[in-house]
Length: 231
Image (cartoon, rainbow, N blue to C red):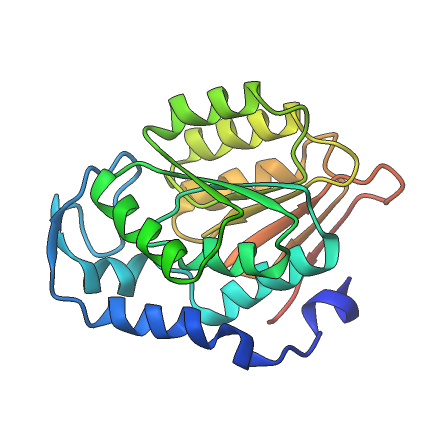
């Protein structure tokens, strides 16, 4: 995996249209009312926020998005779930990596979701289904309709309790090849505790700590190992 995914060279030109949208969002002075159903933002908990502030503090950095792209490109997961759409940049990277994959992404705020949908429309990405609502309600309903999931990116509601809850929901619909990605594993002490607890689950075989997020592999043929890598 390290050579084929983590170290793989990518032609960065393919991401230019997405990064143009990111740059536009970073300069957008529009103020919206945010219905934040998670653990709050790194920029504060104000309900009125500027788009450029959301873009600055909530979007995954380009190198993080490229890692998500690599994972999708290499594993070709049929079904991907993202908890926490934000303005749609990380969603776009994952959807772009494999147009045969179907990405279900959940966003708690109507106003933020409208910007994400604009991102998807501008990039002509038709393999994304945007769901709006509380993660605790939307995720179980979505999982009921799916036989199995191949990848899930947990990037919303950064509390210990909810991270563990979403992880356990994912396990119930996992298979041997399912990849679970947990964002911001060092965001807070409770989030780090959640990550350490996840490593101890019996179904978890290999974890990769990239600092900004952790990757969980469930393959039964693997031995129990935990890696920390600089990337």
